[in-house]
Length: 182
Image (cartoon, rainbow, N blue to C red):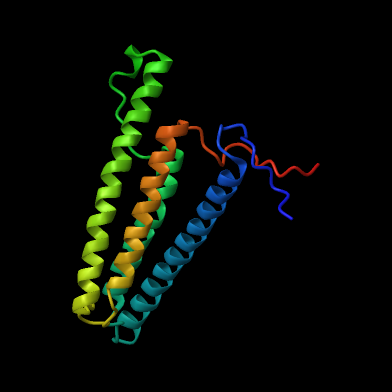
């Protein structure tokens, strides 16, 4: 039996949805940490091999590029969820709290549409890459799966912006999860 209540929590979102968001955020965070650690280790091994053994890792540059792209795209949903992206608030001092909320929700709706459009473009590009079997020149890594993942992470980012536009910018992970247990 599912003992997670479905009623709305402190942020106005269903508790089950908040739990899914927190779990997804933790998963992406762990994946991002693993990618960053892999990049660090690759760089250390490449530098040691290059300068001590005069034999650099040929694929290091491509692997670093791919890892950096994965790191950036994994971080986008979390950055959007917490609203920690760069914001220019030139008119905020002139607006009421309600007007500020309206501006934030409208900008989140526009971001959801824009990021969703970018996800569609990237998905089509991934399909094209899959059809032509595009690979990296040195390592021969197939690019389509990576671009599909990037498109999926953009969809997640668009959904985060859509959620913020509908429910506001309260962070679901800021309030403790209510599980119904004492």
